[in-house]
Length: 111
Image (cartoon, rainbow, N blue to C red):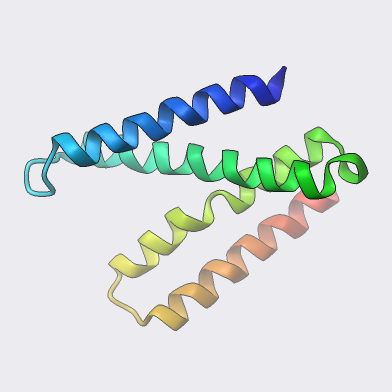
């Protein structure tokens, strides 16, 4: 049941991403539109991570653990966008994002 609800929300978020990118221009988009876009990207990323994790490790880990890990790993695209906006190099941004997500996964494994 949880997977069906998350899949439905993920499809709605994907439709919202398509609508936002097609109906607004970057110069016309305000902060609220950018916030909604990043939230929708996070929801879609969590759904993709959950789908992959449930298909690979679903029986070993269980649905709740897969959801916890996918909530942490799904934040990676948002971190990459954030580190790119600071103007640093891509390699440093990717490494810092991967370190942050790795620390998050270690913390989730302790729960």
